Image (tube, rainbow over all chains, first blue to last red; front, side, top):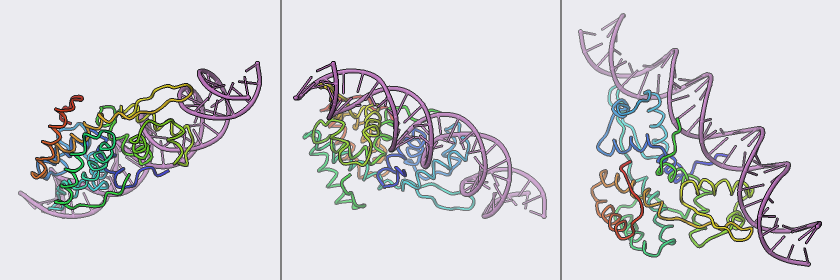
Length: 119
Length: 119
DNA sequence: CGGATGTACAACTTAATAGTTGTCTACATC
DNA sequence: GATGTAGACAACTATTAAGTTGTACATCCG
């Protein structure tokens, strides 16, 4: 029943929404408050907070605390698993992506993150 | 209201389910019939067909027709947009991923697929 | 032709998602 | 201490998703 709770599923699910992707893109430029993230959208503050909770649960965003602000900060490492899954399987599909996979392996070695069990 | 209908969202949403990822992994080894894909799971044939419809709608799988079988075939190109989005934004986050992005650019040039509008 | 097999379609249930409004707390300023 | 601002939490609605059962259709085989 609970279809989505492994790490990869949470990551992909978090990315499967244009609003959240735009928020991540915004956060790529630096930390932002909730209201700053809200600005570009025609959504209530509460809706933005919900999206942030999804991103937080997926480990893509962490939040600080500064006075009444809760600055949001990006956690890009969590994306490694996602890219890795895709690259790993695409490598099987088309041999010419071998180099990509190797490149990612190298990146992971030089930038150790978490585990990547098959599937 | 209709939160999910752009291409990237469909791709990520399709990947956000462990069953579907396992099906894709299976298809990576070669075309499979619906029943073959069903085998590893404790799910009805109809449930598998539904997952296949999601994968089809996302453009990740296409289906042939051979007698009463409907062989499923992988369409890996659709994953390029997903990897590209991640790589593009992660590049901003951490400078050291510049090489990855360049590598993906090179791959895309040597393996032309579709467009990748930002977000 | 008749039965078995492979897959699809429809209706239904349950649960999750995305959004809303309304309210509450925390801090800052005056 | 009152007011304004930042953000969270709760309750509700509507839509979508994942699963089921039941059935229909098409193709192969005897």
